[in-house]
Length: 431
Ligand SMILES: Cc1cc2nc3c(=O)[nH]c(=O)nc-3n(C[C@H](O)[C@H](O)[C@H](O)COP(=O)(O)O)c2cc1C
Image 1 (cartoon, protein in one colour):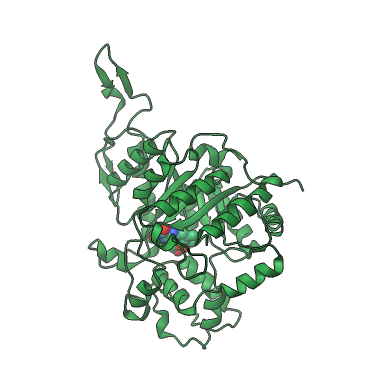
Image 2 (cartoon, protein in one colour):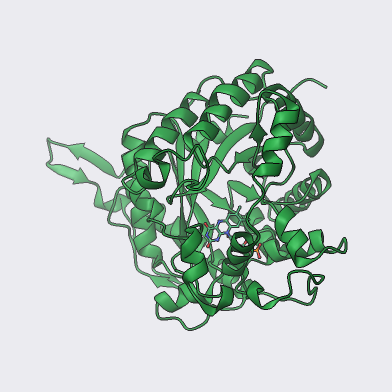
């Protein structure tokens, strides 16, 4: 089959790079003032990435072992800075790459976020997006005066309404409302700016927005939930999804499922680009790459602590060498817990599952050439639309991707060699 082009994105956060390894360099310090991410953005842009996506949460968790200490010790889920603040800085120092920041529908007042997104759109020339999350931690809710998050599916119901309100606010100015007519001394034609008088079940807003309408239409909407309700939400609202699943079969099924939901919602399936998370381990030989992958297994405690943060289940309470308790339930990241259980259903102990658990949807361990071939095959089998590369914890990892893997993908005609449009939406929808 001929190669079909696919998209590339980066998945990470505005937080430290990997700090324990030999190649950490100054990344553990240079992130906080934005320098590390600015450098990374320039490399990724040179390689033609569609976007950088900054995940986020708003808490220091104390779920694991009933204390904040393990979480803070590894620094893997905090400290984090606000991604919305670094986006305009990166935007001013790049020209093409898209920048997607995370904001929670549970905590951000819709009007404030609509205004922030409209502003970012102008600062970046239409290159920004919003990763729509409903938040999954009561610990975060408590920072906003909410004792307990609403139940999982209700959070999505609220988010549906939130997005509807967001759209109404972003459209409250007609595109040609700014007339700039010096003759009549008219800056804005008041007849083209409208109140929205939105009154839903959860939200209420008068509108209009008091900032300019965004450049090139509303910002790109991104979503990452994989539960049945999460998929329906994505089918209704998202332009791109971040997908962390386990193997090609699951990815294929996800694609078929979300596409069906999109058709049910009256949407064209090609208007949503699915990005599958991968964490490639690249070296000069396949053997070297495998040796490296074996050396870089996650620390069991760090992995369990991260999963405790995401699911609010205290994994410190469980026997590491007993089979995983399959009755565990969460009001948090249902997708991750299901994935975790799936690994364990093969009879593994908690320690074994933690050692092998990865957010990567498939294993990519090899040379630039072998990994490019694997990505090509996988995309052909899944049907599209791209990969979200994660785990670039230091400058060496970034270079391995941008100067090793991507040129190989480009040589095969699989990823872009230049940006053909100005806005993130146009680039994302270009193929
Ligand atoms: C790849 C990925 C990235 C995510 N990024 C964030 C994030 O930045 N902030 C957040 O609060 N939740 C994040 N989530 C959580 C999802 O938005 C969602 O709340 C969670 O997966 C639970 O939804 P689900 O039960 O539908 O899977 C992420 C999930 C995945 C899989």
